Length: 180
Length: 86
Figure 1 (cartoon, each protein chain N blue to C red):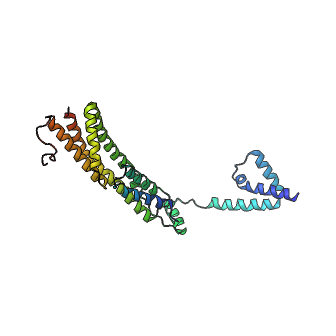
Figure 2: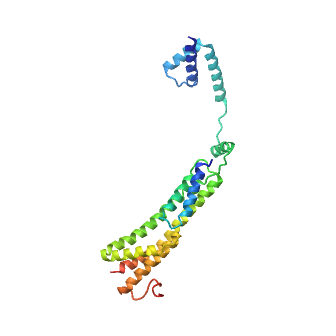
Figure 3: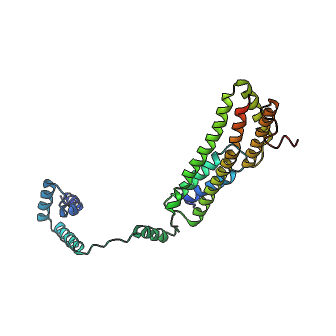
């Protein structure tokens, strides 16, 4: 019987705060009111709780400062032995949009080149593609940007030579094939 | 033990350096920027990992900018010449 009472007391004490704040339904309120009438220990507990509640309610409300949360968590982390830096929220969003913009620029120019190439018919396309592939292998460099630079120069030279052989242009445009 | 942000920052730094080496394409630079940004958005960021992440991001962006400059400079000329060919 004693065990049952202890269990009931535990359940009631867990709900005392909600009872005090008026958050329980009618049935819950009735059960706890009845129990408080019978149980001295729970009544004591309830008296302490209501006194604390009254004390807290009487305290003046404090408005936290603007950076209170940041400073609070910084102190918590520091107390855990971890150093925290103030982040730069204004800059940390920047890399991804800049990256997207650069990728869009690169893709639009490269796809523009390939669309023009595909519009030229299969014969010319195959010949140029073979030359482009040869140039790509020939111009390979350990550093990527230099490799791309060499590749562009080789392609330009190859197209310039073709333009001269087809008499599309009378002189060298690239300035490379003239020297050779 | 290293925090998540410092691991991500290190990955970003290595990818940023390796993006300049001729091995596959520009995906390393893109990943460097993504991992670097991810590292900066972690709850705990140490000054060291903050710096490493920014270096990784900068290298990735520098590489992409270099490629974009080359492409913007050369490809219009190539397209123009290609259009003239028969």
